Length: 627
Ligand SMILES: *[C@@H]1O[C@H](CO)[C@@H](O)[C@H](O)[C@H]1NC(C)=O
Ligand SMILES: *[C@@H]1O[C@H](CO)[C@@H](O)[C@H](O)[C@H]1NC(C)=O
Ligand SMILES: *[C@@H]1O[C@H](CO)[C@@H](O)[C@H](O)[C@H]1NC(C)=O
Ligand SMILES: *[C@@H]1O[C@H](CO)[C@@H](O)[C@H](O)[C@H]1NC(C)=O
Ligand SMILES: *[C@@H]1O[C@H](CO)[C@@H](O)[C@H](O)[C@H]1NC(C)=O
Ligand SMILES: *[C@@H]1O[C@H](CO)[C@@H](O)[C@H](O)[C@H]1NC(C)=O
Ligand SMILES: CC(=O)N[C@H]1CO[C@H](CO)[C@@H](O)[C@@H]1O
Ligand SMILES: CC(=O)N[C@H]1CO[C@H](CO)[C@@H](O)[C@@H]1O
Image 1 (cartoon, helix red, strand yellow):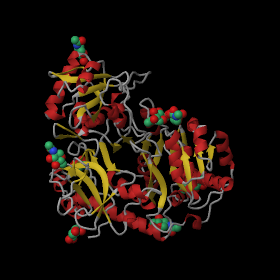
Image 2 (cartoon, helix red, strand yellow):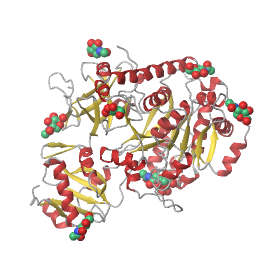
Image 3 (spheres, rainbow, N blue to C red):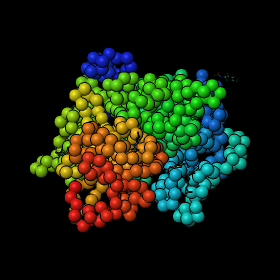
Image 4 (cartoon, rainbow, N blue to C red):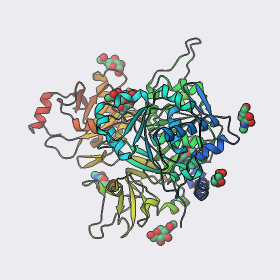
């Protein structure tokens, strides 16, 4: 049955009775309605050639929302009409000063600000396409991304101009790098805007590229994911239908706009819905709630460990009244990805937030899933399917068994086909794509056919079929809830058992003194598999009591083989730009005391953790110790 499923699993309608939630009937209904509506909308826009979201901005700016605030940044408010005019001016300038043409790519290296939005929509206004560059990139990775984008013009936020070193310029001799200074900005805003004719923004198909967003590869160089018009519009239409986001809302995000969470599931969603967005320059526990209060935000966005950092910051106290400001906000929903069950309720309770809308998706992925949860039933779940949707979904998503040696889906020795996991067992999540028309669902990476093909698996359940690899291990319970288990490559084997790093860090996260735990497997000389190691940020200096308490806490909550063998105390976790923990560097350093810098290492001995010394490491290397 050709059901237009853009997103794999839905969120429930609030207030459903528990039983109803269990059978999942109205739940399915709430899933399919928005999907169908989004499909109709995309088809209409394809037909009247208004796929470029510039038109959505224009429709609002010329309509009833003209004088409504669209954007709040740094205390300044911009109405729909003002943002529209600014976009036209920026577009006119790029065309006049640099001769930017329709369909051409323009790279932008910007931190969050109102300028980010003006440049982005200015590019769209003249039918060109933006490539968002992660402003934290330097050196080779920066040069690589700009080269991949094919842009001959790069606009750079003055705040990150130190990253544009002479080496970077030398590596990009044919590219014009323009630092977008406040003076230049005044020049642009003084320009008489000119609206290009519609033919400049003409797009043949909804699956055509609207922009490039780079994925933050933890190893290797970033890849430029092609983001289609279809994806921008659909996601922005479907999500509000599930998490009850509406015109009346003010959305606060300080997640970086170069990433799809803040740009598409933030700004574009707000724009399409006709709501208001407040942008924070970057994440900081010091400014987060201030921005929320000042903008009177009703929805906040989080990614990765953002909520954990908010939770570990001390409460803000009003200096005049002595009042605790934690709950002095109007936030009804936190929307994002990465909130873990160990802090789910603590976060809601402390800041007085009623609902959590946790989503699962990726920039280049073909679909996503969501859970809107006001109670505990969905705690930590990322998606849910009722019986009906499950039946429909059977052919478009699958969880398959993994071969732990190769870290690829297991293949039957005779037939070469994969096998679905049993309920409750983790498997790699795959999404179906049409083998004869892969780009219909998966547009891949820009100018990178080998990386694109690398995300596609063929001959999965029958000869000739094709599926998209998510690289994520997911399990579903009997209630139809799905839970994230681990990234493939993170899970490790120890004592011939599989250890999910996500599960272990969650268990440790429940310990009152643990602020943050990042779990990974380290290779040890003369041992098979990888031993569990956890990089810990603690609320206080560890003493003997705490060390033995940590050990017994882990033993109580985890199977023996999953109890971390090593602890590494660190001051600050290595993070990606979206507050996700990095494992790669610390995993490579392992537990070689010569490689971990000043950090203290401990290991499990006789029921507690004790210092792990250079001598212990030598003995391990000499094969004198067996763990
Ligand atoms: C799923 O696929 C099978 C064969 O691959 C087909 O017989 C069945 O009709 C499909 N079901 C749906 C709901 O598309
Ligand atoms: C194109 O279609 C969309 C979706 O139906 C509609 O909102 C928009 O007003 C249309 N634009 C034009 C110029 O016809
Ligand atoms: C917006 O404000 C202008 C100027 O005050 C006014 O002329 C216009 O009618 C307003 N538009 C809407 C849609 O309210
Ligand atoms: C590890 O996971 C794989 C794939 O799910 C499974 O086949 C294997 O039996 C597991 N090993 C253990 C010891 O659980
Ligand atoms: C160790 O630290 C704990 C707090 O984690 C404290 O309650 C305890 O008194 C300390 N014990 C010793 C022996 O210092
Ligand atoms: C990125 O840059 C911001 C702003 O300067 C900085 O606070 C942050 O630590 C950097 N993040 C990474 C992952 O380098
Ligand atoms: C090497 C360098 O200058 N890196 C900077 C790049 O820009 C970000 C954002 O301002 C800074 O945090 C880095 O220090
Ligand atoms: C996956 C999952 O459990 N979904 C939950 C999402 O939120 C609703 C409303 O609270 C729950 O009923 C669902 O079970």
